[in-house]
Image (cartoon, rainbow, N blue to C red; front, side, top):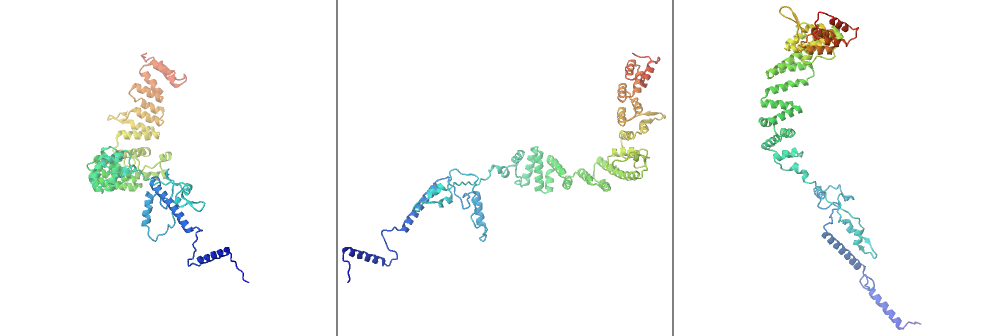
Length: 504
């Protein structure tokens, strides 16, 4: 038996179920309900709100002058390095893919800005709050501050002295102040010569030389030589510079251009100093004999060639004599150096030392050297005296002073003062007997006494006091000797001589 509910409550329940089936059987896939919230619409509203807050911050950032705009590489937009990289990226070929990633941002900027505390990354970093909302203000307060500053160009004043368009006068003034200036801007010949003239007017040799070096590099030598003809001061500096720098070829060309043939010849002659082989040097000097020297210089070059030629001959002969042991003087006094390339007076001394007694016809004879090179009597005398005194050849020394007159009488004569002769003899340890001879030749009485005291020539002093009849001086001098000495006895004999009439 079927039994159903006919109560009002049951009727209402069936009506509710039929309505639900109707709505659920609609052709729309999602049923519309008034109880649930629309999630898409809610998210849309939250997103719009977040974007508005970001836009407000961006507008606020545009109004603030202290906020720094940076590129993806972390460099300030508009800086020099940013411009260089932008230009390089535009010029890079399309297929060049060496740098695929973003460059790293330096964490330690060189020059911070105090008020700029925002970075581009902070706009996209936020915290999640309750309910899923993002707070941009929280993200800004949480992000560490980043500071950027553009790269600074060097002050223009550092380049000013180098690139400025200075006049020649101003350029010389800057050089005197030690500034670095560029001379390349002076291109015309007129400007270059004006610059040189201003340098000469400044009386600074270093600056003059610097300008001349620039002119030498920028002008052909013919033009430079022509311009230097009328500038004596600059010309002297240029010649000195070429000599110091060893540019002999340029210097020879300059002398030829100036017509200074004697200077050209002397410069060529000076080249012999660089030749080490004696035979080659002799041959080179022979070629120099035809150069246009002055008369005085020509004689000098001729003597130089003759002397070297003679020295080569003497050296070869003496080497052989020394090796065979034929000469006693070479055994007693072995040679310490070669005679080659020695001065004329040294060669004469060598000849007087080793070849004094040789006849005049030989190359090594002192008399031959004196005659060939026309040496003065005083030069020959002093050189021979020193050489023979060194050998203790006192007979040869005495013969230097002995002269004979037309009557046959001999007399001692010296071309130099006997005081100088005594100094040379004493320096070579001449005995007292030799020194007394030349002390007695002194004419000045006071000088004779002084030199006799200096060299301890007692007989000369005693005889001088006796000749002057100075008994008082003689008694005083006697007290310096012992009673047993020969000097004391000689003074006693002089004092006891009754024929002497003493003046005191």
